Length: 232
Image (spheres, rainbow, N blue to C red):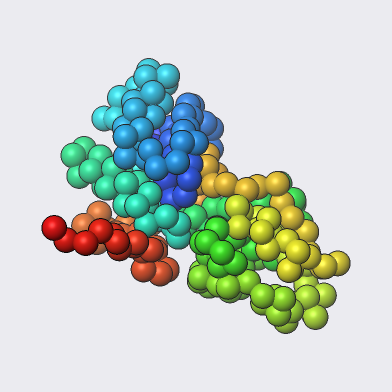
């Protein structure tokens, strides 16, 4: 079987990251860490990846996109871009849960087969988007928005279950959940390259998303600030 060529898009949070992969090999990767620039930079990053690999979008076998949870606006940019390419070129779409990608990256770094992996994406104040995964990638706690408190993971700690926390929401929760059964991974942000293992698994299993109905995983309504200006 020919090794698939896949365009991977990560735009769920503050980073806008794009990479081109051939199987598990990264051919090119381009990223922007500028906040609120996803819509203006994402197509440029894609073009830079294709130019560096000396390939065109017609050459790819599928498009993969991080489905969230994350920023409402950023997720919409990533999805609209990925779906637009799939529609235009008749390519399959693969969606990857952002928390699962973070947990997979943390496990790759820690290599602890007995730990649970807890990705946390910052959702303002003491709230995070989080879940729990086993080392095999199985869900132990489904994705949810959580206000982290001292008791949030006590049921696991009381049974001496080691939890490895990762993601950009883990640092602010460190003082609350830190104990002898917790540790913290250096994996802080999700990048497009971290999607690849899960994308390859989905591609080999032909686990493609319906382009028309695929939508981001928001978990909660967007935070919309109403204007204080009085109507003229």
